[in-house]
Image 1 (cartoon, rainbow, N blue to C red):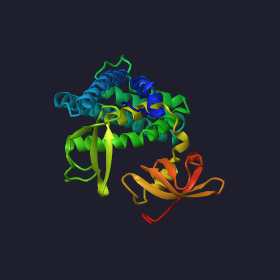
Image 2 (cartoon, rainbow, N blue to C red):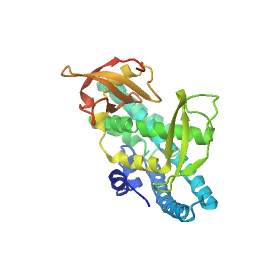
Image 3 (spheres, one colour):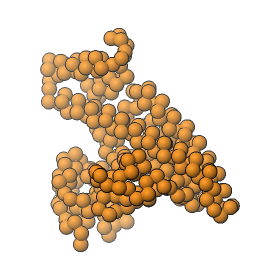
Image 4 (cartoon, rainbow, N blue to C red):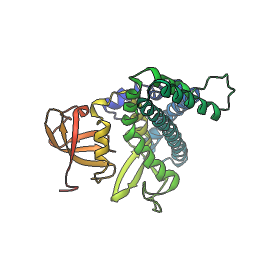
Length: 305
């Protein structure tokens, strides 16, 4: 029996292609757009294969090795494709945000010269002729006239952090056979996957830094990609607060436990923040009781009780 939560069912109503294409910048780059379509096509194919795998697994009460090996191989390649797409997109975001910060410091002719120089550099690096529009320039150009665009890019970039770090850890486990963020380490059973009994996708046991571990399935990643359409801005901390949290030691892999002060003076303790950016939970509260955008300061807490 395939038991799905309401969130999973809601996620599957959104195509992976539509979800990823909703990210800013991607509408300006047709070739990245093509990569998104390819990933969506393979995701649809894998969903069917996973359903068949689960059915055979339950009927025969044993692992159907040929089918499982094929689904596992294709799943790994799909993970690598999603990783490379998001890595490239996030690099584009960094470049656009840096350009925006540079422009904010300039005015008049100096600002105009900086814009022209940026366009010249892109044109020089481009294989296209001088009179052919450069797709990458469209995002930089929008920064010059749309004041809200940098905030839109930054929010999307920060909102993707948790997903990207999860895929990054899995990719290091599968491709480099290492523990993520630990050079020279040896992964536990790299590439060995099991069948998720709830949906038939392949899941991997990933050993993390600090003797932590995570179980990640391909469907987890696909559902998280579909979640990119959701507005996570109420959970994303302001950049200056992110910078303060960056200097605090981890509580667990990628997570930090801190106290946060809001603009009205209220302080919340035992707040868990992932990758210095996203508030994920607050002890003693079922839901996050504040808007992370209103946080103005961070207080370090003991690493462990």
